[in-house]
Length: 402
Image (cartoon, rainbow, N blue to C red):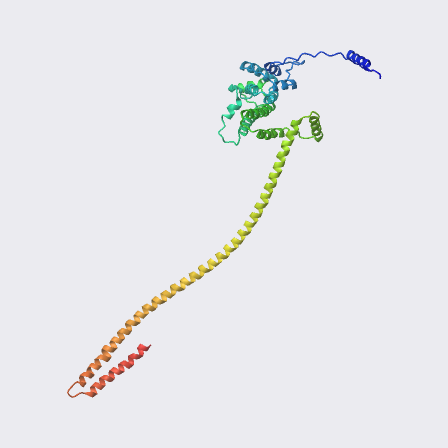
């Protein structure tokens, strides 16, 4: 049996000599968070003596996320940083990114202090910094009377209204500058005064910072903030979108094992599915409503036809009633006339009968009776008077028959 152990040891020794063990470098001591923030916004000139814009490197971003202490973040530091940031970050781009890093800070206490510091910087940099507020968002939010549906929408509308008004005013000054001098003209003459483009950038970054401020305060639901930031992103869509660039961007994120982008896309996919399901329900409800509307229209048409028919019948009955009333009134008049005439005829009959009985019948009968009651009855006289009475009765009895 051959022993290979010496050869193995020799190979290991040669490998060790070829690759000497590297001494581990001592871990770099983390810079204080106050120093990091000061360097981010520090005024630095390039070779052409132009001020370099503030930038937040990935290393500084990670340092802020993992920040352990914020003891040095005081008001004096905020004032010094704000003075530099007016020159290095007039559009608040870097400050907005700093707030994003702050919002991702793992420690609650440090996150709250960092956010308050950033909001103080924003309050010292925005268009109404002359109010000397330390929390512009709380000042705006204090004006909310509960008329808006959400605090996020109120804050957004307030910031947009303020900035759009200032942008329109600055644009008007550049077209027709006033002849009078004043503080605003002096500010316009100052190179640090924001242009309309810078004002628009400030506005958009303040919307981002304000949304994260509301999230930290517990006054905004994350799902609402997702939709809000999605609306902000829509305004930054390129006019000529390249599907190739989008595909390469997704490939880059995939190669970097970026899972958060997958979560973001999945969130919007779920939202789209929910919207599609909701749309189907609305479509079904719409179809049901249309069917119900068609049924109601048919019912209304039938009721209208029935109503018209009833109206015609009512009109006919009213006409018939009017005619019957007219006939009844005529009959009443006729009956009244007949009763009047009857009363007149009755009077005439009574008068005629009275005259007949009293003069033409009673008187001759009395004379006839008197003639027959004599000692020597005068029958001829009695007969004569009876004949006269009979003639009168025969004459007048015909009148009673008519």
